[in-house]
Image (cartoon, rainbow, N blue to C red; front, side, top):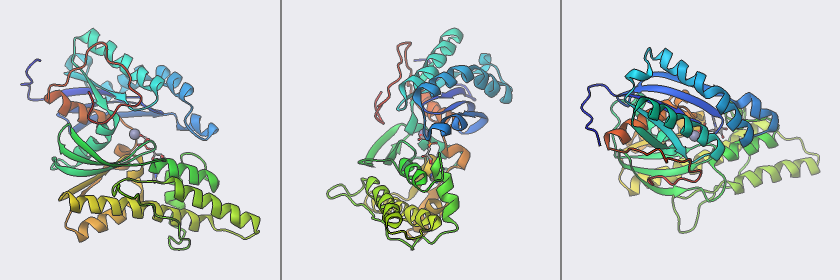
Length: 344
Ligand code: KG4
Ligand code: ZN
């Protein structure tokens, strides 16, 4: 392994695990010189969710121009880049493959080290970008469209997952409930907005806790309860208020997220807590977590919305610490759709 003795390390990072084609140039893990995201949302929303085949095709179309834009915005070129970081899992296999193949091609052509990054490690690392003082250890709640994980971040690159969802991810539940009340895809931001006009205590939806697994989550029950509530109203011809449903559902989900995170922080004695992933943009979750942390004297960290959603800057931050730790992938790096956090 080559020694890292440069004052400034520039990472070109690539992310294509789902429906965002993204590239970024990150200096020393925490300074974002560019963060280009080409979203395919408008395309997928016609189908009510991400269509994997369309996602892969769009990544292929966009990836070169997204990378060029990231280099141009950062006022740099591939000649100045020190390493290429790329998400290699988890995610949609065809989508991941586009980024992985691109990263390998660039790294090979320019003789650069290749650093594969776990997508969740990226989400967690988004917190390092705007919080220059944040260092492990801390507890991180990762809530996205595909994942709901409670993670002990022991050190850079050292993770212990202590809680996970048994069924739907938090974002998935938001998206499904949004569809049921006619809000369209992606539902999370729409439920967040509509909830501001509703009463979170109007309807009591279930708060699932799992016997013997105190930090695990389950959101399929609350999702079904919302669907049953709507069907019940329709059958009895009772008028229902979508804003109240949205606010009450959002409260049921955020209550459980905050409750599990607070118990884990207490049990594991963490004095710092971070949130990450698309759902970490949720205003009710941020407010409730902020209040709960303040009451317990826990330092609370959260990324800006642009760094919560899928982006490559977070992959650059994670790749930097992996690079410092000596992680190097070979030309046989493959996409791993079900990659586990902490696996190599
Ligand atoms: O992290 P992300 O961009 O992609 C994945 O890795 O999955 O997360 C996307 C998810 C979607 O389910 C979306 O509805 C949800 O994050 N989301 C939100 C909000 N903004 C995005 N959920 C609740 N409230 C929001 N404000
Ligand atoms: Zn994500």
